[in-house]
Amino acid sequence: MTNIFTPAHWDELCQKTFYQSKGFEAIYQGKIPDICNSYDWCVQLRGGLSVCVYEIEIFDDLVWIRDRSDDYLFGLSFFLSGKVRIQRHGLTDEIDEPVGKYYSECHYDIKETEWWKAGEKFSRIYLEIEPQEFFQSFGEEDLEQVPIFLRQAVTDSKVQPYYRQGEITQQMWLVLCNILQCPYQGLMKRMYLESQAMELITLYFQQFQEQEIHDHGFPGRKLRDVDRIYQAKDILLSNLENPPSLIELAREVGLNEFKLKRGFRQVFGTSAFKYLHDYRLEKARQLLALGEMKVEEVALMVGFDSRSYFALAFRKKFGLNPKQYFQHRQKSL
Image (cartoon, rainbow, N blue to C red; front, side):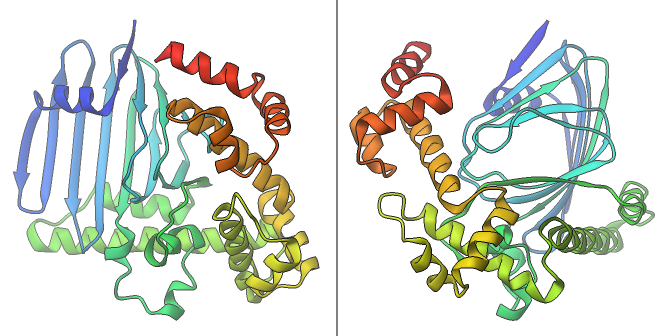
């Protein structure tokens, strides 16, 4: 049998588990009948940073469905045992989260579905960061060394969802083991765990920068160009109805047209305006799913002046024309 849960349903069941609070630590531990054995241990560290250990043993297959979240917390999740299959709708296809990998994420405004298999024990270490609080003491020059999607949560009003997997390195494994085997208690425990969490974040930043250079062919001194390309992407997505021309966009971010065209394809795997086209269609799909606007209104909001062209492009991408998709979603609600 497969159990299907939403966050509200899960929280209601977890209230029946054993809870213990010790100052800056919180422990939830117990058995949820016919569902799982669960152990959650969370420690609040410095402002905007906490570390959590999650362990769960599932009795039956479980599907976890989370609607869009208004939070824009940033997280690093390290997979220690058990494999989960997950989809972040509009952001990723169905992908596996296996042992030896970790992900970095900003889950703002994302619907998520997870599939957990019975009979496995799942273990994760999760670092949760509230960017504005965590980075409040960082200067502008320091923030330039922070990944652009995370920096947005500190400096911009518009936050883009993000998900990316990486390999757990040997150095990371050592730090993760230190967290699990912390030898201290009280204040020293909190200080020790904070030092280990900060080391994990440092190793992540290092790996992110190295991967950006490797993936996109940008030498270290050109990482600022990558930031400008991300900035160009944000400008496009902020002007769906009337986007700038490529020349205007290049001028606005401080790159020449050739560098922007080549760099955008290197970073995002497609041209700037193909990226914009696909984003418009995905945004339209989300708006139609809400059922609060007419097809014509949706088309105009995402930047399609021609309803016939909008219908053709939508059908090509999603297999249904906008009106059919709207009717199908209304029947399923």
